[in-house]
Image (cartoon, rainbow, N blue to C red; front, top):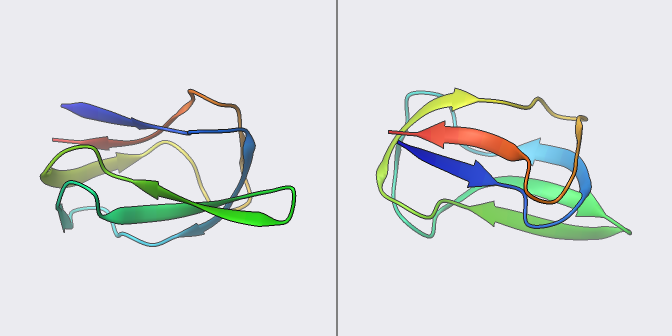
Length: 70
């Protein structure tokens, strides 16, 4: 199990990957918006996207868990 973490504080602008999708390491799964910049959040491992811990519009701090990949 891998926890995908926010790399910086910001709002979850867009969720790209759907729950249940097979994800490859380095694949973008969501986009954060911070200070008018779009920051892609990528998976650090291969696996299946088991769970989202956020929804679009949520605010996250750096280090918050965004998704779980198994």
